[in-house]
Image (cartoon, rainbow, N blue to C red):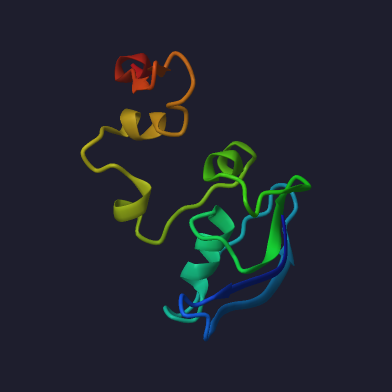
Length: 123
């Protein structure tokens, strides 16, 4: 993964939430983002995972610029995120463990057919 010049402006474009963030990771490395709320860690995670589009810069995975490519593409090409609030963003609390695990592969057969999830396929 390569991140270069990642910049994210506030909604009113008056403040830089991220300013020229640049780093690279190699296969097998794990990046942990920590920081005080309001100093940019949440915004950085959102920009890396595709939840928000940065105003400047690029995010590359395996040499492919994914800055404007879907979250699903990023996931299938090796980007994984463990969110700060796993109950709110990481799990569907009403689902079983098996059903939550299925959510990463729900688009593939035999787990879905005609757009409907086949939960029986995970047992």
